[in-house]
Image (tube, rainbow over all chains, first blue to last red; front, side, top):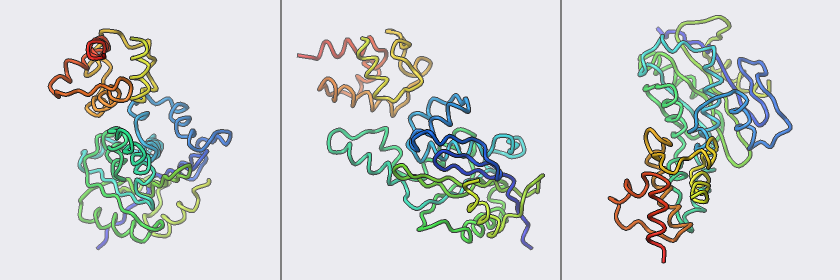
Length: 208
Length: 80
């Protein structure tokens, strides 16, 4: 029998806006899209100098994970290897790949090179929160809630992990979108069943 | 050395650090400025880009990049 899982928190970031659990968390429309992420980092008062060295995709995912977990995640409930990450996007690490390719014409940048894979963002989140569970990054033409639900549900069912941060992390040029879900086995206050329909509904509510 | 500090901050994207906050003899790695192995590679790039210097012997790295002062001394002694 399939054990039910629940979305216990969600977070979306688009240019100028953060939505947490369906409610507008922070907004600034008077700032360039590319500057918004740093503005958000500074407004939230984070102290994590490595943030400044991250590429756009990692900054986006790191911030989305911070906002997702703040006040919604009890780290003490899980061992490090019990928390997994499953994310997807459309353009992989193309934004940084292009920037790195530009440097190859002169002197290649090691700092850019290390971000020329999409799953590096998952590593940054794992380092921040000391998660050591299964993590995968898939590339799809578009957001695929059916795949996401089935894949995460299966891994939860097999006890590969007990909690999962999953969703969509897309960054290219000045366009970006994060939509992360925290999925856990026990239901909590305001949690919703982890189904294709609820994943899709939350995704479509990216704009709060 | 102030120019070199500014170049380090720019090259390594240390937006949380002001050049004047870096002491001449402050260790650049570990307990000092806290740089990592990727930063070390970026420092090598900095030497190439700004000073046309190539570190010929990798074993020299820890000595050359110990502090801003040791970097400055290396640059000074290797520039024509």
